Length: 171
Image 1: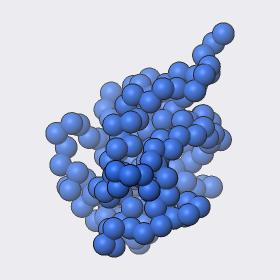
Image 2: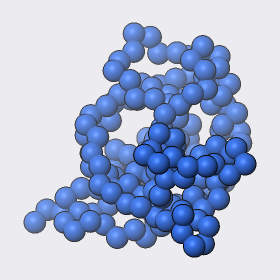
Image 3: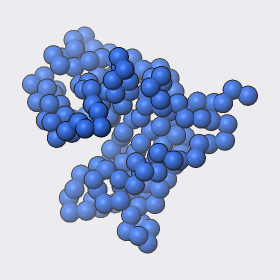
Image 4: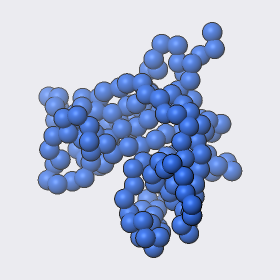
């Protein structure tokens, strides 16, 4: 842990091959009440029999709206539960903005961006320098604008990850 009692920022490149994602899509804006968004997600997920567990939050644009998509990567689905969507995303490279792993979560608080110091990853993500030869690929025309991962299984503890899509600069 750094001297400021906030975990140090860590970045790395990663790649995801094409994948299917099953979850609950909700259009959001800057004024969205995320308490209501999460209530709707847990109500929909609970009503489906799948429970409220999720692996990722994918942010992307659909029909000119920012979508907040909570769910899991899947191999396929014979049936899509009511209120859920199944979306195929293309392969992409990412620049992951996270922090050093935390062994102990403060007073039992789950590993989220509300956890002390982890919100810093959002601010850092906005201005993070891209790796040499790459550019951001997280605008309204990109397939994904961000993936959030509450990685509780990181080596040495847990961490909150923001996956920023990137692509090689045509040279």
